[in-house]
Image (tube, rainbow, N blue to C red; front, side):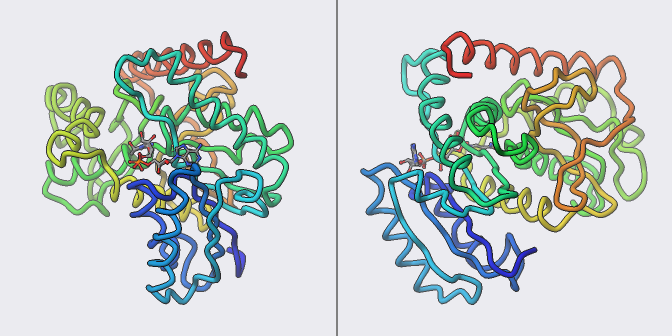
Length: 326
Ligand code: NAX
């Protein structure tokens, strides 16, 4: 990694922002030897709260942290950004149709994509966390024609980590012993957590658990974990989402030697996912770029699940297109 990097975080005053900023500033994301300039973007009504967070960041006296700037202007927030974490989004309010939600978010991610295009550093890495994350990433990328597509990603690492944790709990092993798990498709309840190629302590997971458990417990548990957290915690996932964002960027920058993970990346047509859609795939990070793992076994059961989630991504893309936002 570079010795000094500018990291822009949108939605900085939100609950994920609050869990995320302190870990970035501590060096957990880019490493202890990379100095960090933080740029926080908020809407005007939340700028003061973000300034409060900036005061607390200062009070931590984190060694890697060089500076914190707070703004409500996207153009200055993304100025020189090496990493952009797009967390702020418009949540679905009561009575809001899917089209309204997509439109409201296009009004955020379109301008932010343009600001990234015009002001971010060459080689900027963008992670979209704010939902609907995959389609928001597609919109941001479409509005940044000068930035290579592969610089735009959407977060499915939380889903991935949830799947790994569920398997480790079921098998009584450590999370570090679980490898080869994949989240396919959309970051939504249609996602497909796939263990076809997974191993635990070197043993195929498929030989350690039965299909009924995978279909009726594991897959729905992972796909609906966000709702379970809301139900139990009384608020949506925040620290776990922040931790997944740290994992995603750290792996992207530092690489994933010998393992793979999951990320929403722009499809190159691999595994029949239409080119250009931002879909979750099995990926490894090599030399600072995400690469989709090739040649993996995709049995019929998996193919049907992947197709269903990809169909949802196509419907979201088409809805945005109809609105003239792509
Ligand atoms: P909060 O509502 O706590 O915070 C969102 C913040 O974004 C607010 O402070 C708001 O003022 C700000 N914001 C809104 N519009 C903005 C704009 N145009 N520019 C800058 N800031 C803006 O939400 P939080 O719990 O932090 O969640 C943030 C997003 O992450 C939501 O869209 C949520 O759905 C999404 N999530 C995505 C996950 C994933 O795995 N991809 C998991 C966790 C989370 O649900």
